[in-house]
Length: 200
Image 1 (tube, rainbow, N blue to C red):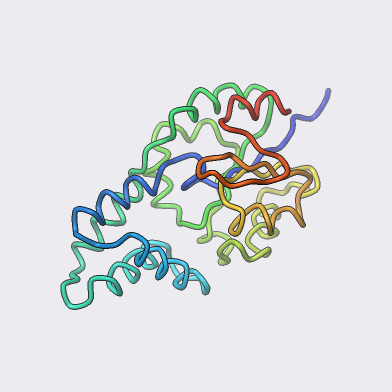
Image 2: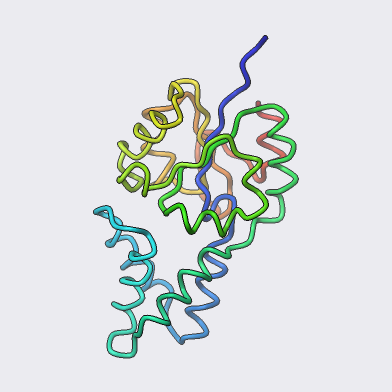
């Protein structure tokens, strides 16, 4: 019996559209998303729960106007990010051919909300809460594959982000594939999950 390929995904921005939900909420509050995301990048340099990363980033942008309810609402909006249009059908088809996992810069309680009803597609779900490292730190990947009990050299890692995922993962896994959500370029590239199915 031939072993199935192992595929790991980034989740937010790759499989679900977190930019849509966060940008909509920030726009409602009259906040510049670029300023928010600049703080978010700073906040993940050292591990802390991702819900706190989101709240701290919003607090820095809002200043004295901030209160905890604004932050809590942001966390829920983030967690309710919808799947991109190709994702559910794509996961159904990929699941027939491969073992699937998620490596995410978030925490378990958020992913539980985001993947409600979709958990069955995944053999592994690993978060920064589990590894205590945030991508792009290579240790986030190494620890995740250790938790999954798989050899990284057998893994295909898929993401829409070069800096956070593909550049560090490329040193560790068998193959990396860019899922093109934002017009970036990479050596292996697909427009949607159905194209990735054909690449296996």
